Length: 165
Image 1 (spheres, rainbow, N blue to C red):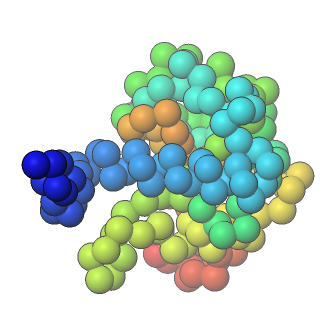
Image 2 (image 1 turned 60 degrees about the vertical axis):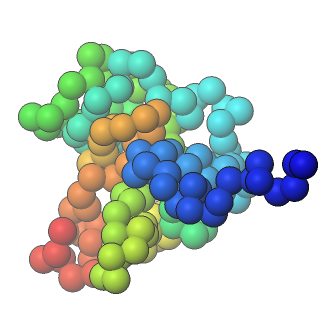
């Protein structure tokens, strides 16, 4: 007798590892960004260049598009700024001339639930196509970049006081 015994219990799905959850969130962000902006994974320029794996530092460039919900934006990189001590990228210069997707940082909200960093979301929502900017970004897992920290001006622009990070 086959019945429904072959269907896993719901708790099986709740035991997904943190890394898997983050990968699902990142994939969801990319799909959302693709749908909202028309820029996405099919555009090979959005793939993280191999030389940028492990990057931690500043990227300078021009905003190509920003997701209206503030989850991420595409930047055409014109220059690599400072790199930080934790940078392990073999060839960051490989990013110059490429359009890259940068997501808001994912963490936990005040209630301890997984959520996008609200100051990053507000900042991304304020971005305009064609605007030139410098951002701190990091690739600390997977094939994605996310904002690391906003400058005082970027925090103020996102509607947050300039003293917070």
